[in-house]
Structure formats: structure tokens, C-alpha cells
Image (tube, each protein chain N blue to C red):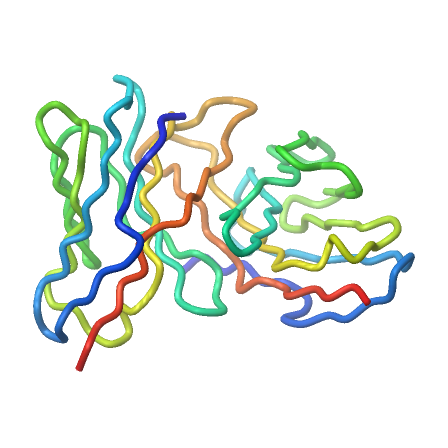
Length: 115
Length: 113
């Protein structure tokens, strides 16, 4: 079974703090994604990475950065947390292969509250 | 990626089949239909996907109409643990630079004892 783990289930930070969210997958997947999920807005892609040290902006990258130094690990960084970044953050990974295997596997999510 | 339309909510009796519809009238020839679900406070879970033929796996069946403008996800014997929000997503598989999934608001399925 594919396993995607996230460093915290719940996190409370203060405005202006630097926040690190870590994601690790154990299936040697090339692609990794960071989404945020807000009520009524569905999932929105922040960043994704298709290889080590490679990254691409998603739909809402502003206020975020990412790091992928190792294939299994993808970090999301909030340089200076703001209250509008209070959200559920979801990490996912997928295999680079044929369409039959193009599915994304999600972690359990991190509920971040910025006070 | 094509847009999808799903009913906001459905109920299903435990042990009965749950049939969740999805309309995707603007789907193009190279777009797949994906289904994911999200149980409360968990990350989304992949269920099944297909291009034009019907598909079945251990979780569900996917029926796609011949014109591909709509599809139905079937959970053959719904259990209480199937209570979740179900998302129908239409997208091109492995499109470089656009491998993300567009989740809409989905269908909230409630399985009733």
C-alpha cells in the first residue's frame, strides 16, 4: 500500500511565523503535490514537483514556497504565516507512468490555524 | 479540464447499491473520468478511473455512457464506512505541467443504517 505521511495533523502558529509542513511518501513516486482545501472551494493546487529539485507553481502559489531535496520528501514553507493561510493542507504523490497508473495518493492532511 | 456536475447530496440504505451520477458534457476525447472520495477529516482516496469502457475494481464500478457525457459510480453494497464526499473529476492523464486534480464540491453520500 502506498503511504503518504504528513508531519502533523494539527498545527497552530502565530502571524508572521515561518511554518514548515513536511510530506513523505514511501512508494518511489516521481510526482508530489501540495493542495489546500477550504470549505466551498474544493482543493486548490499550491505547488507540485515532478522530480528532485524540480518544482512548478500551481494555482495559488503566492505566500508559499516548496523544497524537494530528496525524492521521497516534499516540504511546503509558509515564509510569514498569515491568518488567510488557515486551512487544511493536503500532500499527494503519484507515479510517472501510463494513464492506467495516474492516480494521486493523499496524506491525512494538516489542519493549520494561524492566529 | 472539463467541468463536472454532481448532485450535492444523496442517501443510501446500508447494504444497497449506491449509484452516484456525474455529468461531464464537455469532455474531450483524451480526458479520463476519475472518482475520489473523502471521508471526514481524512485525505481524499482514489477509487477508480476510466476512459470509455466500464471499469470495475475491488471498491466500485464505473459506468461511462457511450457518448461519454456522463458516468455513474456504483458502490455495490454500501456500508456505513462509505459515508463520504465523492468527487468526479475529468482530466487529461499525464499532461505535463497540469497534473493537478480539480476537485469541485462533490456529492455527500450518507449511508443510513
